[in-house]
Length: 79
Image: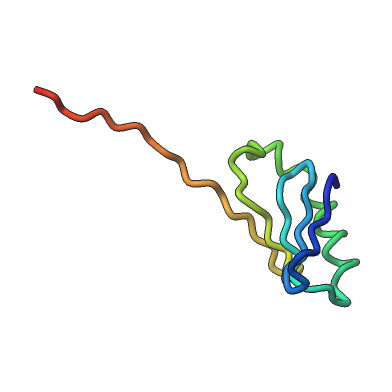
């Protein structure tokens, strides 16, 4: 963990080696959220961290990973 952003008390945000992690508001789930985050350590073996927009742990029972959208370059037909 490299940074904790508490500017919005409704959404605590962590910056980790996996990327940005949204925890939501401080709650009794915090310990569980950290356990789930620890279990997700190997995520970058399956997905590049640059492909992860953020990890949502607001509900640690159903964590989700928001992926960055892939941008494709399309050449215009100039004939």
